[in-house]
Image (tube, rainbow, N blue to C red):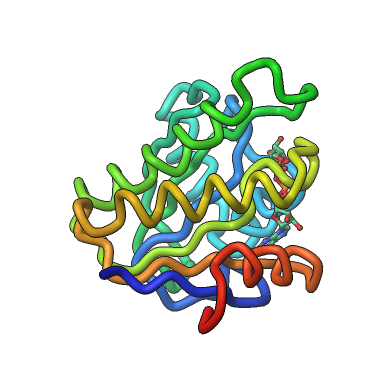
Length: 169
Ligand code: AR6
């Protein structure tokens, strides 16, 4: 069974094979975790992203990690929260699923996700964490992923993930 755990801090510094970026559909950078990843990876990242010609909501695309410790960055585009009736849960689940599929494609065994969509995009933290954990529990093993780290930037997000993951997380 894959290990699912909570870690605190800046995802750009994590020693895992792939980190996930909470991007927007242009893939050309932005604020939040996207800005932090672009700053840490260096300007080659935006050049690589430009060649991908954007990404639809619910999908994800891979680039190298450039100056990051991680070898890969999976750029996922989460939904903007609009009250929950516009397929936001399905689109968020699809982001996590696509990142696990990219992990399988690239042979990645250790990866980290930020809390996609829960910052600027406004998705409520608790239901977002429930989706993240459910999709990773369902698919990590079949995608060959042995460890998933949920990287939480703030204490409140970490507490939500710890609750959702249950004792021992
Ligand atoms: N490491 C880990 N988590 C972080 C970091 C970091 N360095 N920085 C912020 N977070 P957000 P979204 C957390 O807003 O809601 C960008 O402009 C943050 O506290 O980064 O998917 C993109 O270009 C929150 O819990 O992403 C898009 O336009 C989580 O990461 C838009 O924001 C996600 O917050 C995407 O919005």
